[in-house]
Image (cartoon, rainbow, N blue to C red; front, side, top):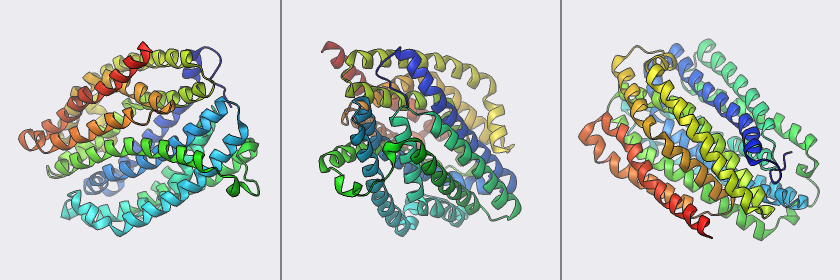
Length: 439
């Protein structure tokens, strides 16, 4: 456990962020390895089949992670106030509500899968392979939700090491599964999805056993279901849905953008998939700081320490902006090599397109840094509206530009979409922070 309401904010934030960052990098490294294994064992067609539905996968994963993190905000707040019985009940409530929600969404999405894929404009030549892949991912969403709740609950009490150890196990199992299904059994792309779900299931079981032994206040007790409090559940669901919608609005915008990309051909589908993989790695520092700020601000809100909240946000700005400089150096020296390495492809059209994407977009990463710090800090203190407005602007911007810039400029239009959106969506966040500073 880690009480974030005392001590130097900079040191606390860095200490808490490092395991999260390592975990994120490990997960993203797996994503790159997974892409390379698919390309090596199954070829460019299979890469396109996975890439064509990657935004759909991101939508599901982001939604459930948002729910889990939103639930954990309440847990962190009670932990900061040292109300351990409330911490226990919030954890039980998260498991119950998360399970019901995940099972319901999984069922609906399986029934509507083919219409969803037609809407996504998946090319007919890879339609069946893409459907086989994403169907298994959707079927395993309940496992994903339980896994995310366990991880978020550990972070809520200041434990960022357990999630890292859990992720190490998950990635190791996932890579082994990929090699088995793709390389040995030659299952096709659906084998990669099966390896993902199976590794999450095994890891969730191991993680639950470990956490229940380590933290007594997370253990189930007879009568817990009767002690679940409606006001707490409403608060948790409100925050969870807000964070999930924030992620979903972003992903919906990316979903529409992917429709436009899928119409440009396989080379550009793979280019976007490769560029996004690298982008996710480069933005991993922003994501890790964001998770840290949500927990840090929530715990300090429970302790009524607003001065520490402001100091923590300033520390977050400094750390992320320094990383932006490192990103520019990496992108402008190594981008083509990294793209060729993760895809295993020599398609020069694809490599040039992906390189151009990275080099243009990374110039404005400083905006992304500020967005992550402010948006997650607001979620941590219970502001569910402002981050949602910002994410809504992002979604609307991507949709509008997907239907205007991309048809006019092709893949160069895709490259310009996000920088334009970042400039607009940061406005409500900055206005709200300035309002805080005047209080």
